[in-house]
Every structure is written in structure tokens, then in C-alpha cells.
Image (cartoon, rainbow, N blue to C red):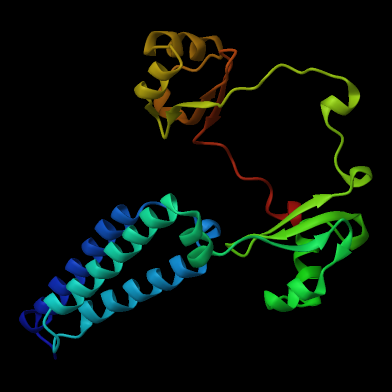
Length: 239
């Protein structure tokens, strides 16, 4: 049986690997998976693979994979700086959007160039709510692989401007309570304070902030509250 003393080096290496990945991720900046380019994905996979080697392969000195991970992160950071400053570099490394449907016409040449087939196109159109390709005016394949669709005028949702309506502008909702904790910075950001919040809660007969899962405030000062102890719906509701 393996003793704790024998496992200790692996545990330490795994801990170092985990912490280093967190630090490098922070250095490289936050990005949603949907925003990642193919190059971002490759760099992330490479750093993860090297981190796994650092964690479990005690035959390799820890400094080697650590150095490799740092180099990958620094190169990715340098590339981000270059592409932010140079349009030419940005086009070379991240590519440019490709028009797949142009004014209602499918551009097969661009589909071949981007390794896109009809099944891919039809599937993504369906997931975006377009079961008839004829309803689409433009479809553009973004550099992150996402397909942006502009429907024809007759098939797009009606907007207030179409009806000559001018609804009031809506601001961003501020989260003023999360998991029973008052978000003081958020309150300050909307020009409110704790006393004001408690008064608004009292108007809704809420005595304990700790019972609140989430409370939001809109630009008019209206507070919406969601409680922690909400009961789940009947199990057979969606069966």
C-alpha cells in the first residue's frame, strides 16, 4: 500500500499545478468559451496537458513543466497585445468573419473554404429558430465558430419602433442582495444605501435579509425579491 509520505510529492505537485493554472488563467484574461478562437482553445488545451504532466509525472523536474506553462501564457498574452494593435496580425491569427448566406443566397464556395457542410448549416439554423433557410437574409460565420443570422425583414420579430412606440429606456438591474448578503458596493453604485433597501424590503413585509436568495433593483427603484425557501414544482409537471 502506498504511504502518505510517498504520495506527498504528487499531492504537492498537483496543488502547485492547480494554483499555477488559476494564476495563468487570471493573467491571460477571462473569456467565455463561445468567445474563444481556435488558437485560444489550442493554447488552453496545451497548458492543461502540461499541468497534468506537472501534477503526476514525478520523473520530470517540476521546473520544466512550470516554465513551459508560463511560456505558453506569456506568448498568448503577447499575441493578444499584438492583435489588439495590428489589424493585419488580427486577421492572420484570428481570421475574419465569412459570409455563408448573402442576401438569401447560400455561398457554397465559402462553405467549402470554412469546411462547413449543408448539415452543419441546417442544424445551426434550426437551433437558432430558422427551419426555413429562405427566411434568412444573411448568415455570417464568426471567427469563434458562431453563426450570426440576420433574418429577412418579413420574418424578424416586431419591435416597438415598428409600431411607432417609444417605451421607457431600461437600465441594467443591480443585484442588491445575493445569498442573504447585502451588496453594499452595488447599492452605492445606484445611489442607494442599506437603510433605503431595508425600507423597500419592509414594504414587501420582508424582515430578514438572510432569507433572500436574490434581490434586484431597476432604474426606477423597484426591488424584485427571490427567496431561498421556494418550494420546487410538482415532480410530474413536465413528465
